[in-house]
Length: 106
Image 1 (cartoon, rainbow, N blue to C red):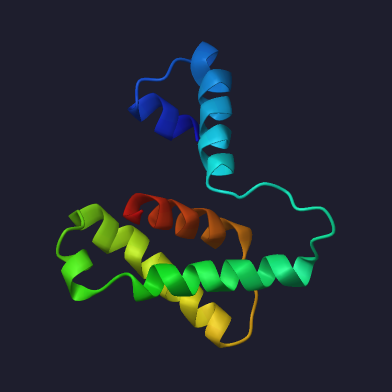
Image 2 (cartoon, helix red, strand yellow; image 1 turned 180 degrees about the vertical axis):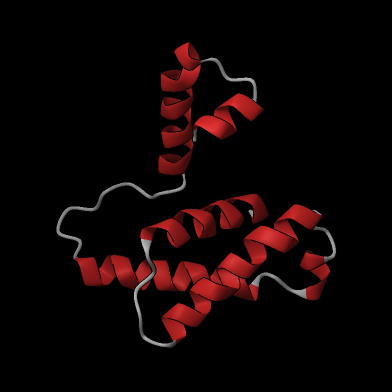
């Protein structure tokens, strides 16, 4: 993280501000809490969101994506779909990348 901050010219006194902004952008991708919602319902919603994102990555859509998105984000979405198809749960590091890719697409 320190190397990324340095490479982006972020001085130490701005790190907290950047962290707040980054967290806010991730939280904005999440829907509001629903009273009584279960973990199984959230898992189902996540699975559907990943499937929707993957199915939206048509050749036409892929042709409009930047090289970095194609090289980094699309493979993450495809990997997350594979994880779900095997019946496994998505680990948090992969989830963040998948959400970012979905947000970039929509």
